[in-house]
Image 1: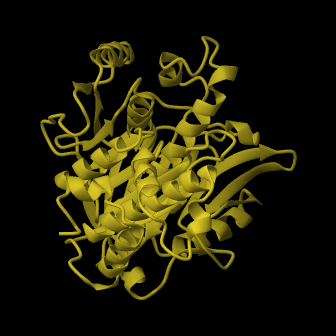
Image 2: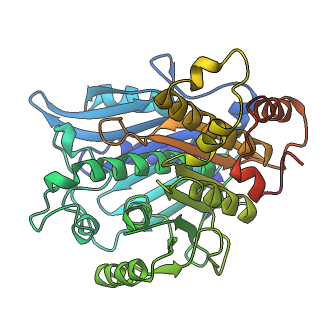
Length: 415
């Protein structure tokens, strides 16, 4: 890891970005901390963006630089001809106050993170084996993990020919979108200094709570290590010994060093506190168990996609509905959906009270899974002991007469 002037580091990245033969993919994400304090955020075509991806594609008109920018709701893609047009597009992006750049070439990976002093911490790693850049314009090929990736084959998502199995299309889509959100969150947290920069001696520690067959565990390891070039150590936690044995066998077949711990989410013992906590579709209050562990560990980043929400729904059936909201709970289906919303709103509020910045987003379209809400939390500082957030939380639980399981696990914040 080296430190140098930011402009010098970006000038070096410019050379890689403008090389249509060797650039595989580049990602700019987050905002520089100084720019945030001044109220400035990266923009593309006048739109605020949180992330931009670049790669070269071959069209009928020749090779073009494809620029895909992501705002809070959707992606916008433009193609500019390689050469002078690409230079203009790249220079415009380098002028924006992005917090980090990750640049993959056929032979190296480069990571540049802007500091608050407008310096850059940079890391370059040679690939053990050169890779070939994908230049196809077919959007189906623009995946974070290719369909024929060995991890997807080992997990049974792809067949022996490297094609996604028809019965696993939804699972593949979930993994892809979860990785996309994980990548953006890690890039943003690194750029803001909220997540420590991992090293080979002290890799990024990622735990998947309630891992089951470890789809996320292996996919996260593969993407973060092979694509982003980050040193990473993953751990999967599941209550079943059978799952741990199966997952250990998969890891051995892939040559991955990973840990699999048998135990409940609430009681599993880890050698070291994780930097990143993942929990995909932990059932009912198991999501609360995962969030409570992450808070206790003071993990820098948490991504949790809840499953069913029985606990608060059961409480709502036992208490009178406050006026004038009787119509929200009169019909069973509406009461269940409201309970889902109320549960996740309370979880988000508790995380904020515990010192996390929280976003509640849709991580995959509803046709792939109805359980598509994701809580993305980044640790920013000390817990909140009062103020508007605390008052809103107290008012909400008092009005509805519910007691969130997560609050009980933390012995507060209701006090």
